[in-house]
Amino acid sequence: MKVLVIGYTHPKYDKRVFRTVQTFAKENEVIYQYLSTKEEDSYTEKNITYMPLLYGKIREKKNFSELLKEVSKRQRFDKAVLELIAKSDYDIAYFHHFLPTKPVKAFKIAKKRGKRIIFDIHEYHPENFLKTLSGFSKRIIEKIAWNFFKKQIELSDKLIFVSEETMSDIFEKVEFRKPVLVLPNYASLSVEPTEKRKEIVFVGKIQRGISKEKEILRKLNDLEIKFKVIGINSDIFKDIPHEYTSFLPYEQMMMELSKSMFSLISFSTTGNETYKNDIFSLPNKFYDSIAAGTPVIVKNTFVSMVKLVEKYGIGVVIDPSDVEGSVKKILDAFENYEYYRQNVEKCKHLFVWDEEKEGEFLEFVFKD
Image (cartoon, rainbow, N blue to C red; front, side, top):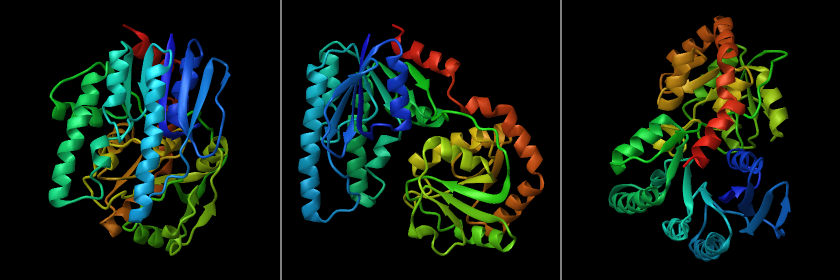
């Protein structure tokens, strides 16, 4: 079989995207499209034909002139992706994202060519179009976004979701179902901790808002519980005493993560506590933390993570708006650390990608 993997604007070695590429390539030919920020030639290596598409740096904040340039650049990029979908030789089109300027066309082209379409829904996509909007404009864009999202799902043969909660919520809204697999962001490897420091670690290369958590961290610092940051160079933390570690390669990051007693997974992407890309998320660093043998401290509104934390007893759930209550819960967790450590050791294999999970994934994708 030949698989066309559309990474869209994901970088070449994005963990989730590249894992699918490597998994398919073990016994199949793969054409892999990904974003490049510099001129690169396509090449073939070990069953994978790498197809970098030049886009350049993506700017999050733009003035009007920059916005127009960005739209034009995006249109050219999307046209190149459409051309790959229309002209490449493949049996399965595996979408890790869609094309915002032509949100349905890519699916229609693949469907018209008789290709099987797998849509890997990493995020609650309609929410991405709404996170900075409110009022009337939000209602209009929400209707448009759900309209094309529903069409994308209709055109897909099979769907993959990151969490059960995302799947259930979306199926409830579209009012029909498709063959589905829930595929969380499993860790790539597990680590056996060689030491544990009396500290809380925050991991990630994306800036996250933790304004409500700062007071908790300050109070814990007064009680000699240190705070460490891995992979973020941000002014967000300038008023919190902390140790900073720059971005690390994955294996090094996992070793550093394994040294901390707890991993903090509490933030607000938009300031909206009902933002579904937060509450239904199961981010890489959640799975990485458990695989590194590090129990977690999770925000109470993160429904999907809270469900797993409470099911396996692998951490503590806090309400960041209740500073004193959160501090007490965390201190109690430090006092009873052996309970959480043992629970993590018992179930960490459930959070790591392995042959069994790979086999289930391949069967789902390739089985008629």
